[in-house]
Amino acid sequence: MREAFLHYIWQFQYFNKRELLSEGGEKITVFNPGMPNSDAGPDFQTAKIRIGTIEWSGSVEIHSQSSEWESHKHDNDPAYDNVILHVVWKNNKPAKRRDGTLIPTLTLTTRIDDSLLSRYKKLINNPSSIPCQNQLTKVDELIKLNMIDKALAFRLEQKSNVVLEVLAVNQNNWEETAYSILARNFGFKINAEPFNNLARILPLKILLKHVGNQLQIEALLFGQAGFLEDVGKTKYEEALVREYRALSKKYRLDSMSKSQWKFLRLRPANFPTLRIAQFAALINTRRSIFSQIVESMDLKSIQNIFLTPTSDFWKNNYQFGKSKKVEVKPMGVKSLESIMINTVVPIWVAYGRRKDDQEYMNQSIHALQEIKAEQNSIIKKWTALGFKLKSAHESQALIGQYNDFCKKKKCLKCAVGHAILQSKH
Image 1 (spheres, helix red, strand yellow):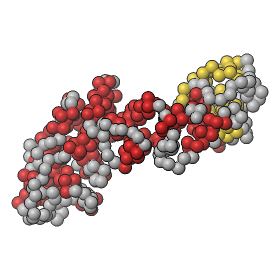
Image 2 (cartoon, helix red, strand yellow):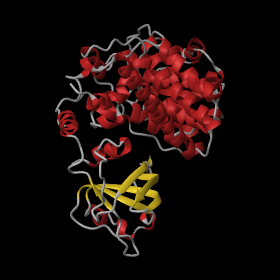
Image 3 (cartoon, one colour):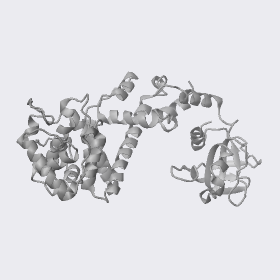
Image 4 (cartoon, helix red, strand yellow):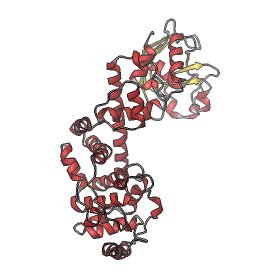
């Protein structure tokens, strides 16, 4: 029996409570099952339970087998001294506190409805990546909307957590943090990691010393990215090499290897060389990226921030060493929307959480509602099941739902899974 199911059963009290007795024969009355604990320590806290004639306030610990109390070393952990009840599926060994006193044990083996258990096993053992896909048609639309809302809230929290983690590393420097997050997302998945490494070895504070001189900013970025090791012989390329040699010596910089960057199967508009050129133009023109992001309150204003023109060479070239000149168009709508979804919105949410300002969350949700729904393999799975997605509000929610809940079979934490388990059909 999965422990997660027992957590679910205990939290919502979905078991037969008639003549509820502990393994020691004491009558049990549950006034409050307690609050789930997502941190270290007992599974439920602040529970209120009468055991025998005494009313207790404390924690509840849940295990598939009671012997796990000892195998998990709770018997020597002071954090578990206030456990007042041990809830298990199978009782195969008494549980004791550090002082040797027995903890009352409640066994649920015969107290859970067979039909509920059957529905749970059917759901959790479904080999499909979306376990409930065959039962979704029976679920009310309002419950599906509830699932979407909760999944989006969870996804935004997770993304903003990443921003706050980077902020901590950057010692609460929001500008450096926005630079790091934006750099990673300029890689657009395929080159996300190389771009992340580039931002790591070339801090924003160095680039800001050269704002106003786009050639030097490009030299620093392309040089650190490893692209100036064997470039062609145009005057522009020679100038980049010359500037980078001087600047790398001044700042004692060590470059990446060019081999980290990927070009294969990418459209020229997504070549990392062009993205670096666009990134350089942004740094040189906008300077305070974070300030502009948090001060811009609408989608169009945000997108205009990222439509900064590149230097002349990159208006006709996608990479170095190519003599054939082409017309390079500005960053496309899909790329701008990707930056909005993966950079701007997480920064807004993180900043709002830090400032305790709900307006940034409202602004984030509104922006996602204005952006068209994304199209990828995950979204195709949901549309095949009848979901009609109009905006990134829904697509982001369902991408998060799939990755964080469906694939991990966390059906018990999902509104749809909960509804299916409670269904009598």
